Length: 112
Image (cartoon, rainbow, N blue to C red; front, top):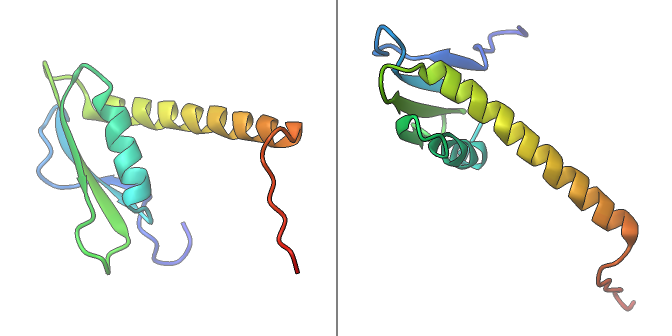
């Protein structure tokens, strides 16, 4: 860990003992990942609730709250969603690269 940088993800106080409900603080992230991650977490039918917030504009963190049905692990839901989001981004990146290399798109050229 470099300097005074906090851990990338930490569980905030107030989590249930079985971690079926917890708030995760993710350092150095914004609404961009917060909204995509919330969407991916909510695709899991075992998730009862998920929301995220950016506590204050001067704080470089987001908080993600996850509550699970049946005492299941919110940590597992977060890790699964992060892996799924990573895989989705990889597919999008590969398809974009393939399309770009094909050259089959409209091009605009500025006149001087």
